[in-house]
Image (cartoon, rainbow, N blue to C red; front, side, top):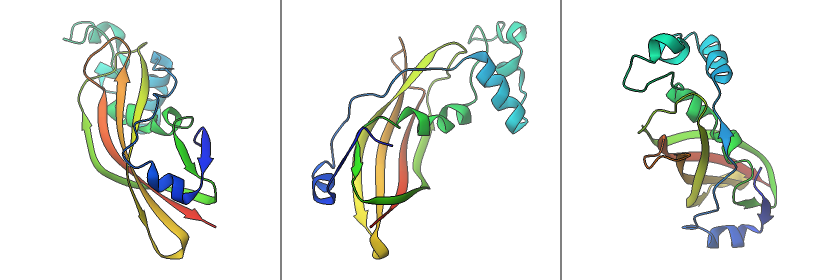
Length: 154
């Protein structure tokens, strides 16, 4: 969940706001290996440290989908949400681009911008966030995305 809550009116006023980045999260080799097992994607570039050293990356890299799946954790303390949320659901993405691989052992964090809010019937609110996943010490982000979430408000 977000750092704090605000009224729905205050939330609408925050469209266009870029929030402080979330905390750093280390993408360790153990996490990459576990993800490979869960998804059955055992491509050598992710799990074979010796073979991966011979690639232009110089070592293993995280799956793009691992980095994407970490968004939930990366934004849990970022920004604000309406104070009357009953539940929220992942609604999908309008855009996802994987721009730079995350090498094993690197730290990543999310930068979030509230792009839009659309009120729907039944107390639902469609939230679009612009996300950029920063890799510590690198210029190019790991990924950029436009993430959609549907929340139900009381």
